[in-house]
View 1 (cartoon, rainbow, N blue to C red):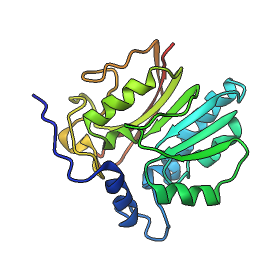
View 2 (tube, rainbow, N blue to C red; view 1 turned 120 degrees about the vertical axis):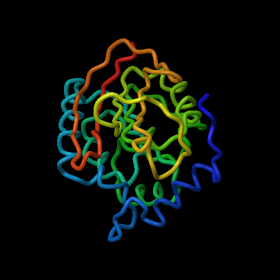
View 3 (cartoon, rainbow, N blue to C red; view 1 turned 30 degrees about the vertical axis):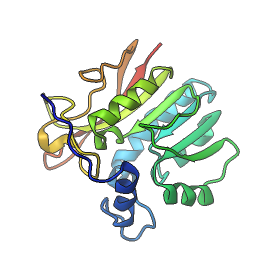
Length: 219
């Protein structure tokens, strides 16, 4: 049986500490969401496929970015949307983002995506967020996703075959060391979708797995 690990601190406190202690790097930054949000080789192809998708929908979609981080990604997408909700659990990070990024169609909100009500939108962005959550938290998020038409999910997963969705304690790390990764279509999540399309896959060096971006059309 997949045991539920004990979470020593609330999720909000853990994430705040990660940024305060710069556990994802970026010692020269006030807030830094990790190399996955700043490495051009990773971010460029990701942004290309998202912008193509948003333009194909005539820039008419309302987007909800769950786990917007330091907004180094989202800042490139807002002009291709009708409305952009940027969500993160770290209050000081959201306050910082509000001061830096100001656009008529952009709103920042400090929310716990596993617990709080999420804004209405057509399109959810979840970029390397679920990989840090426990299975219980992911299940709570999945229940909220069923009302959204499109989800673009990015996850860091192992090479080749792996056992999906091994449980972890929420925090800095991910499931990779357990040869596992998040797959929303598998147990215990079993997200119901109409169509699945792999948009991008980035292979990391030194056997560090791959970053896969998938479009889910729910209805």
